[in-house]
Image (tube, rainbow, N blue to C red; front, side, top):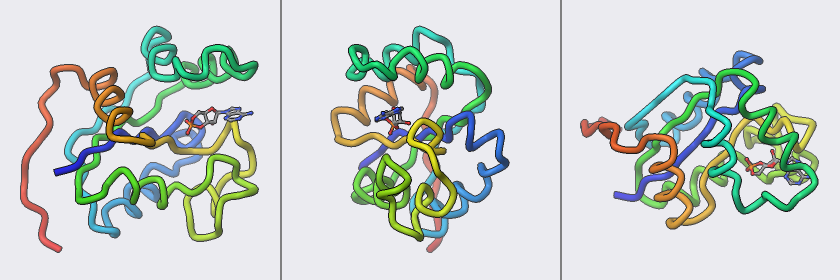
Length: 143
Ligand code: CMP
């Protein structure tokens, strides 16, 4: 079954939106199979966002992501990568459709509440960065 990595970023946690985001994921029918609330280490943040290392916003992005707790999730389900990207909406909140998390709750690209892997390769890489050898749970969801 396809798995993706999802992060509720420090702004989402600080604004009390963990429940809202989790509720949307669960109501859609996706399954949360691992979850970790922690302040991300700088090395992990840099590895996670390595593709943006040369961008001008990179230092600010890393310092923001490591500034306060974020919630890391592994989310499972058929086409979970594509579905999670649709639930989150476009990266830039002004382009995110209403009804998506970013469309409904965000105003700023740097404070866009959530992250989700954009490909199978990214999902595998990001799950490894944030969950390493941690146990990914198996259980049955009734729909
Ligand atoms: P995310 O999906 O986590 O992937 C990269 C992140 O960089 C993105 O969401 C934004 O929160 C953040 N970011 C900050 N500034 C910019 C910018 N100018 N363009 C794109 N992404 C940005």
